[in-house]
Length: 143
Ligand code: DAT
Ligand code: MG
Image (tube, rainbow, N blue to C red; front, top):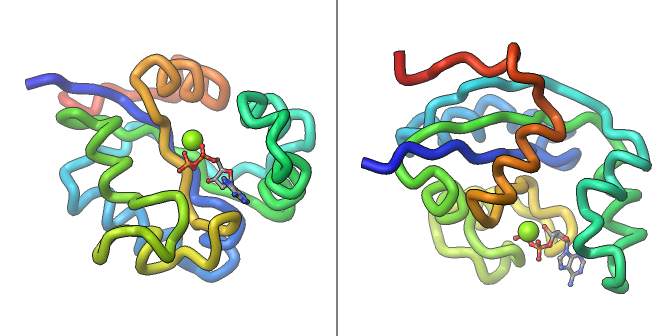
């Protein structure tokens, strides 16, 4: 069994609409352990750096405005094939195209306000976890 860690954000639209509990519950129901979680309000600089891979895209400014528009809940999830498992639970980027039962199909408002972020690879998961969490904030969920 390949145990992995991935990184999640409940975006401002999810926090504003009181969906934190429902979304964390879906993660747990999908056998993902919440290794750490906290609420933060990203600075513009943090959002720009976090999404720097998209800096040349036309929606970059809008994306950073949105991600800094209110608090978000960042979490580290651990489980079997956690990166892919959480991407599957989230659904496609555009909620209109997301499979039934996924978080984005159920809660997403638009391609921009799509309620959750999840790492797209194990390598990026490690970078994203380290960006928002210190080692002492991460317990060993397997124990
Ligand atoms: P994902 O979040 O599914 O990994 P992504 O990495 O391609 O998707 O894009 C990051 C975020 O940028 C996405 O969650 C919402 C926003 N975004 C992507 N494509 C967009 C578009 N065409 N218009 C507006 N926002 C977009
Ligand atoms: Mg992405």
